[in-house]
Length: 154
Image (cartoon, rainbow, N blue to C red; front, side, top):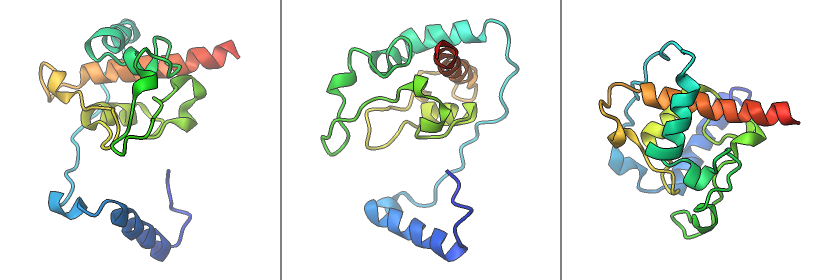
């Protein structure tokens, strides 16, 4: 979330506190800016491609469940880097509860980088061309579709 409402001094204090939680951050040097690029045009088959990728190639359903409820067959066994249980995100709860952001580009970024300290891996090595993120955009549209479906059911 944005912390723009905090005074600059408080934002920097927050940065320094977060860095203290991960003492080895400096060994990685300056963070690189991810080149995600613009979202490709959406076509009528994007959500279907995203569903197929979600279910098979990237195996998202194994943790997040076939309909995104966070109830996949591996969900109960997931542990974080500190060996604590960590439930997968339930996409049907809405965009405000997504840890990495609510926009499609945030989902694409998460698929690129994974989430350190969690079972969420990077999938960039599974792309035929790491510079072409079209498959990630299709998955992001499908995840958004799951959220929309759940909202319509309520």
